[in-house]
Amino acid sequence: MLLCRVKIFARLFIFPVYSLCFIFLIIVFSVKPVFGVKVKEKRKEKVAVVVFINSAILQQNALLHEINQQIFYSKTLQNSMDVTVVDINPRAKVISTTINYVNDKKGIWLEKYRPVDIPAVYCQKGKKIMYRTMISAQEIRTCL
View 1 (cartoon, one colour):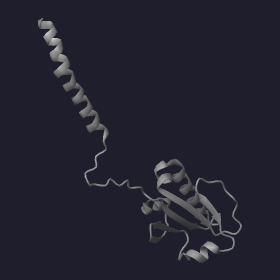
View 2 (view 1 turned 60 degrees about the vertical axis):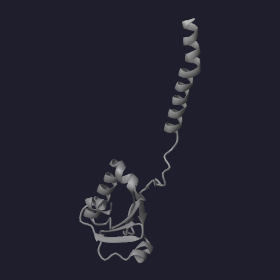
View 3 (view 1 turned 90 degrees about the vertical axis):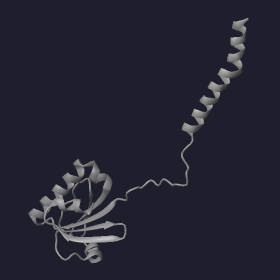
View 4 (view 1 turned 180 degrees about the horizontal axis):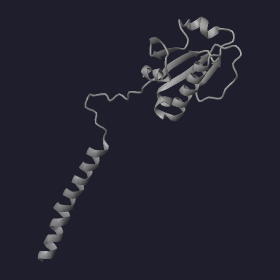
């Protein structure tokens, strides 16, 4: 008789309480929090970097290869900046690089940017454009 009462008590009170707790936990942990605060995912835009060199000068040719190696070996730099190297040497050889390489034979890029000195670097973050004369390949990191 007592065992029968325990079973009835368990059916009527204990199991519904456990199932309600279980349903409550599912609802609480599956609903995304919406408390009037908008969560914004901040995507970083890539920085546009344009480097002007003259590959006829050996130091600047070495600078081109050093920039190429830095971009090739660094996934962080690859994901955070788009590098374009503009070579103003009209007799430059076509080279294979991990960066965008442009041989400016007609002077279109020079006319557009008008760098004061060569080698030079232009960095564009959003609407802000920064110009700097390059001494070493490390200076492209200042664009970040």
